[in-house]
Image (cartoon, rainbow, N blue to C red; front, side, top):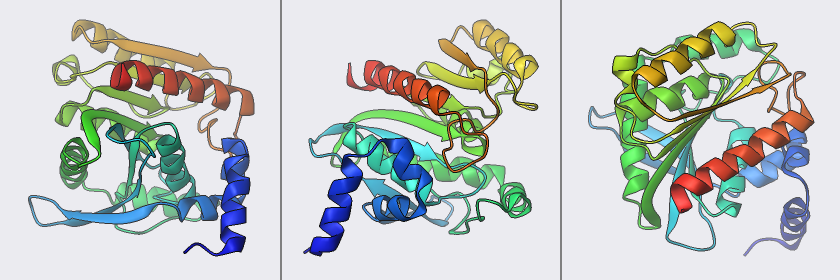
Amino acid sequence: MVPLQRRSLLAGIASLPLATVLADPRLARAAAEETQTVTITTPSGHKVSGALALPEAKPAPTVLLIHEWWGLNDQIKTMAVEFAKQGYVALAVDLYGGKVAMADDRDAAKALMSSVDGSVATETLTAWAEWLRTHESSTGKLGMVGWCFGGGWSLNASIATPVDATVIYYGRVNRASEDLVNLKGPVLGHFATRDGFINSDMVGEFEKMMAEAKKSLEVHWYVADHAFANPTGSRYDEEDAALAWTRTLTFLARNLKG
């Protein structure tokens, strides 16, 4: 049984805007604790884990969430809970083997990101995608959503395994058209005009490659900086984050629920 104090806290969280919860470490921790840790073993024998949140109404479409370079922290777990509230079986994966960088330690985050083996990450995400598609609460529909480091891996995973809809928040999209032809579903991209790396040159080339591959792509630009959708960071832009979130929900509903 959930203690009365915790029930009151969770009830209060449910009435708050998502950005408010994400920006408050105490609230984000409480929300993140609503997820359950699940583990699987990949075909090559790696034991991997993730944070699962289930909707009230089942069966439901599924979404696989991929964290920023900080790792699977309370912010991303809270996003899983929010997606569950929106009617999705949501799984936030862990590509760092349980390691998480502090929000102000960019060197640690960079080191964790650099330590990721591409083939292992691809196998991990492919295994989780299959797990979600065949979950007892799943309709079989699957979406990918990733932020920053996870944004690039959202695209990579959707190339590696059949995905019905892919959402990229300011992630690397420098893939060739011969790779992109493997995409099953449409792609939605959120990008920032003041992003010094995931810039108009990269995104413009991505648009060209997607056109060559004859794949559906919806791109939105925001007058903001990289990581503008992260309420815990200094680059957060409340208005643009809210607009991107609305567009994400509309896109996923159209392709996973419709």
